[in-house]
Amino acid sequence: MNLSELQKGECGIITKVTAAQVLKSRLNSFGITKGATIYVIEQTMSKNTIEIRLHSTKIALRINEAKTIEVERSECEI
Image (tube, rainbow, N blue to C red; front, side):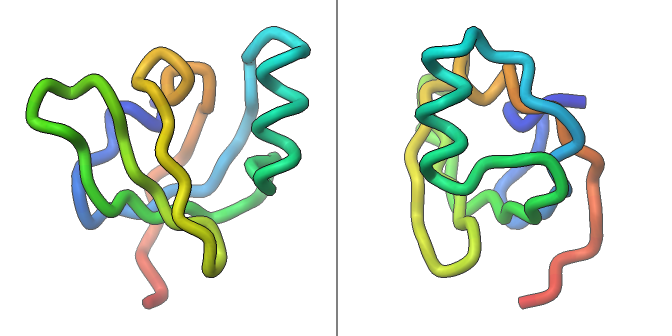
């Protein structure tokens, strides 16, 4: 599944980032890498953007960017 499929309040562990190299570099700079655990804070009503938390950082991504991040649903440890 990809990040855009997680719902508000769900967590996932990143298994793969399939983005083009430029976007992949930007995501890596945010800490979005294989093995990182993310928490979905919110999705906009129009489902155009998703807000996630990675460690103590909040990040907003476009849905098309979130679709390039493969995740495995996991239990939240908040």
